[in-house]
Amino acid sequence: MAAEAENVAKQVEELQVNGAAPVEEEEADTVTPWEVTTTRATGIDYDKLIVRFGCRKLDDETIARFEKVTGHRACPMLRRGMFFAHRDFNAILDRKEQGKPFFLYTGRGASSGSLHLGHLVPFIFTKWLQEVFDVPLIIQMTDDEKFLWKDMKVDDAKKMARENMKDIISVGFDPEKTFIFSNLDYMCAPFYENVVKVWKVVNTNQARAIFGFTPEDCLGKAAFPAVEAAPCFASSFPQIFGKRNDIPCLIPCAIDQDPYFRMTRDVAPRLKAAKPSLIFSTFLPALQGAQTKMNASEPNTCIYLDDTPKQIKNKINKYAFSGGQQTVEEHRAKGGNCDVDISYQFLRFFMEDDEKLLEIREKYTKGEILSGELKAMATEVVQKIVAEMQERRKTVNDETVDVFTKVRPLAYKY
Ligand code: TRP
Image 1 (spheres, rainbow, N blue to C red):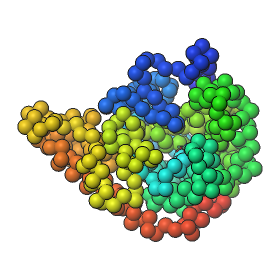
Image 2 (image 1 turned 90 degrees about the vertical axis):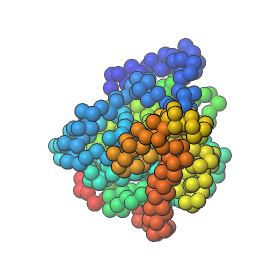
Image 3 (image 1 turned 30 degrees about the vertical axis):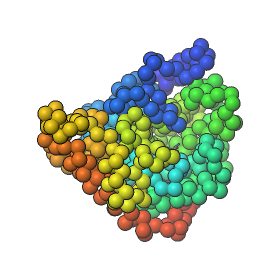
Image 4 (image 1 turned 90 degrees about the horizontal axis):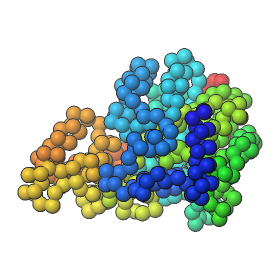
């Protein structure tokens, strides 16, 4: 708490001095909820980001404790550091150990009709976590956020949120244990109470320092962070948790969402509410290279969940940045660079088998596997995941969405 308060204070100070959000060095990575870029081909420097944001590295010791407490082996994304940092994850493990309640909270702002592969990462992981922890899951759809930030009508933002819900449901969440809501539909009295309580304790200078808002930004943008914060508080969902505000949540999300929850953790004690814990993922890189993440508004950087097997193959062949050499001879002699190779990065995220992955890394690095061969392997793995999603998606319709969004208790008692 003290460290976080200090961090915010420091940012406010720097803001006042510089008139802008702090940038430490000329080539610093940009990581905000609205922009993720770096000049490095190997992507964001995540170790530096941990220091800048003031969160913790998810170390081997913590992962070992997770395995001990839950009795489950860490999933590939956890073992391989795709989820790499956290805030207070141990507090959640304590509660698991003591049999005390907590819940999972994550979300999605819909800016395209279909999800892409990058969006899938936190949801696949969240589904796995929910199975391992067996706790309620809350999913927020920020149609209000997209209305405010994008050139979009309210009705279109709502429609997109609903379509995206179908993709999210297709990941395989349990309707007995999962509540999905869109802000523009759900905003009920207890939820709004939490929003105004957050508004009261964060001043405009702090919001500007944390989020980089400018005086020209509309009021809605400055007010929105409280809406993403409110689901951290159990009392926003009385149908599930009653009036309790002492039940904390764990938020699996990509690290760009941290500003919202840094703020939430700072204000929680003043609201007499439990602080959220977080577990952060890295970004799935764009096809063109790790300088940016997949961006739904730029179709050629993404693989969408409604792409055909042929489209997936073509996109990977045409766009996936290769860490291989210019000619076969050169590649055989010098080998490829997995750290910048997007096909390899996709395998790291989505390939199940550790040994096979290691073998591919070694052989590609030595030049024994060619770039085209690596692309074919990535294509196969991605096609399989997308096909499985599409198969489940066929069974999801508007009635299914109604089941998940109905305001109701979940299969837990509080
Ligand atoms: N702002 C997020 C987005 O644009 C959506 C979101 C809302 C979210 N609540 C969340 C993401 C909680 C992670 C965790 O996608």
